[in-house]
Length: 348
Image (cartoon, rainbow, N blue to C red; front, top):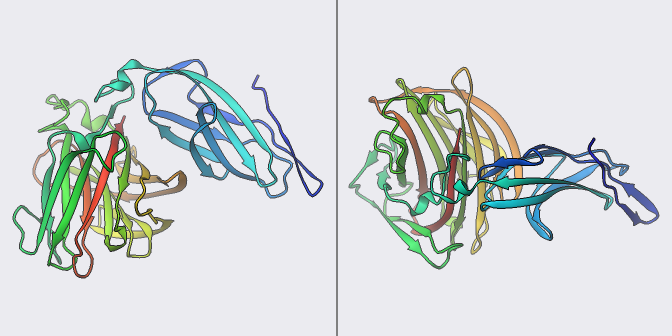
């Protein structure tokens, strides 16, 4: 039986009692891979305004994640070892309740490819990236494009979180031109050692997480910053496209693959200048082959979307999974750079 923890808080004579957090993942006493999938639901509270937020302490006094509301569903990248994490809820009256969960992270999680967690780590620092320009109004890819240029520099130590940051830069004169960087992580031409020559992996993958940190000093001139994962097999294309529309409404946009256009959401996207921004985006290919955009987390705030779209036909016969990062130019193509670090791509 799960025990509950409660606290009392006094605000103008009000006493708040918060009861039992339920943690469904990770299971207590389990062995898991990294990133570790945390799923929890808040318990009841005597506070009339209800539960305000939830969070995860990966160790005493080390708050690793917070989210507004009564549900928590996220992934945390943890090093190999044993943990006792505390999942906590806070109500609007100052009450709190905590549930402890103990687990062990597999040692394989420290490698670039985790067979337990099925994660590619620090993809921004790996080989295999190629850059392409995209010119309006068609936005077909070009390798030598008039009016737009780009550069990519790996191994940046400052700004960096671990000395492995990569600097992506767009410059030029063509208004609204874009630059796309692409890396084939699974399948034909895999840069991560997962070629899938027998075609037994890619078509079985349904869940993807794009987890990365990004930093810029003049993000206000970024028309959009794009984070994509593409899955291709059996003549089908599942392009999970997302963009932080920094200029266009400061919201997230998602790609309708079947109809080939962007759809604006109401989920805010306001990245901070001169600070590291943490983005986690969760996708799913459904059992009936639709693209499901599950949730966005930016700097600890999670918003659930659960919008789905049909897939498109895949050009050619390429079989694999690709990761994209893209910078879009504004009305005068202002030059700017974005640093990316700890880009971890999870799949299963």
